[in-house]
Image 1 (tube, each protein chain N blue to C red):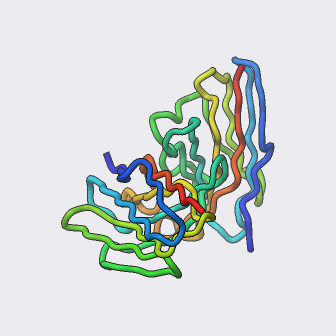
Image 2: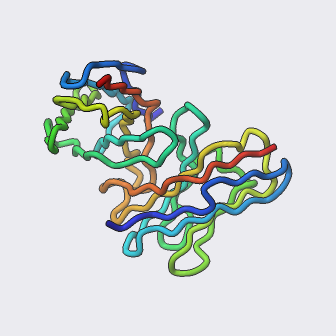
Length: 114
Length: 112
């Protein structure tokens, strides 16, 4: 069964450093998403991406965040200057038809900012 | 806010019993989805019910939707220890397929 692949599974970074979280969505999917989940809390929407541009973003997704689809397979989330409160699980998801279809989630990247 | 809110926050049952989780939301939707998350792992899509549907089944799962009350329920019949997980409802924001918002989830613990 097709999977969404995320790397790395765990990243530890110093406060103020830049991090790039990587995702390989399912190949025939057209809609891509990033969510985050602070330990034990709800899954929060960050951004959606369709047709090579951001479709919608939340208030969490400020100027420190950016997304890119540099080639036909990868989808990345960059945090320019990490803060302690950015520590969370970050999940990538993809869908063939947007919200009209179930999302396939990756296993997540646990980001720890120290 | 578009968010779904699940009830109860936590549920503990014996293997073989049925588990019912509820979700309420605040605005109109095109569809509502349920997901499962095993501890610390990614979410797995379980079922999607559209706003013009009232009930949907998938194996041991039964989902109902009442758009007049803006609520949904997920019933897991004959639960197993492997059903132990967090269950989330999620609603679309009717924005052309660009955002699905998740509730806080119900933690289900099934005792063997």
